[in-house]
Image (cartoon, rainbow, N blue to C red):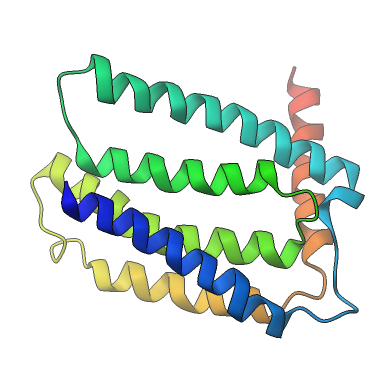
Length: 171
């Protein structure tokens, strides 16, 4: 349980360090897209965040108080996801760069936990599934997404709008 607490605190601290020290160096005055100014993207981020926060809160409560199984990995994963979602819901002037940075750090911390849960369910070790390849595959994508932010909002807005439009057609 102490490892769980240390891992969550480490994630909180590294996320805060990146937000305060690293982010001001990569945000230019020209590329400062605030998500609040784009109604479609803002609405989708808020609504999906509320839904996912409710879902994770319910399953976290169920796993902690009702279920007899005690999976520490699930508790860590719930804390990491809920922190990410609360950051989205609390921030009013959330830029696309902050969102990408926050999402990248969240994926860097949640991937090993998800792989550990997979290994526990299938009686494998982390080396059997080559965890180093999974971590190495995330790091360049994270660095690339932070440095190349020219049309990030247009890509996100298009994918979110397309998914909502396709969802409306299917219904």
